Length: 298
Image (tube, rainbow, N blue to C red; front, side, top):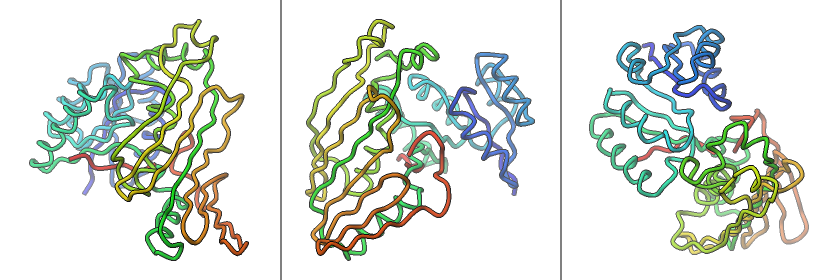
């Protein structure tokens, strides 16, 4: 049975959705929508589908089974509500929404849609990386004993040009935040996925880059967060967009029987007696830009 899909938003991240959809033999791409008509037309021509500039027109005419949201954060909720009302499933890019209130509204709408048989997912694709799955399996197997704590770091670079290319990224109203909600969110998701939901959170965040501040950027570029998880374990995450380059993301879990570290596309095992091993992924990561897996909401 062939299912149909549409993508709303034809910006940078959209190609991470359009190319896989086009490659699926049992899925037909029935439309691409963007308020920027030339951009919508270019994406539609590249992937052999229809271009739309109004999402409601796309929903009424193309009638997709699933809608992928590749939009600025503040547009996730209104477009999702329209798609769900039209009977479509929804897969949205992270984050769910820029504010807690909108995220709650999204969650409530997803629960109501679930009663009608519709699904809502959020892209945290790093959960699907071979190394992430291997780390979770190692923790669940008990062969390393009980987790004792974890740390993670995201040292990336985002300068004024990045924000000028898409001004919504630098505003609280449209982005909802900076390095935590946009860049480090996949690493934060992995900590929650591996160690359990957070029962308490403490930390600080700041906008410390004078160059981006002069460009009108409002959101934080550096943050430190400490989480207490349902497992009783504490983790710490350090994230910044002020590094000179995009360094590899690191996530390390300390256990009773050694250390497990994700770094440089590999899972490193370190035992107390000094034995170490390294397991590298057997296939590429699920996306070139980031690290987590679609999670059902509701």
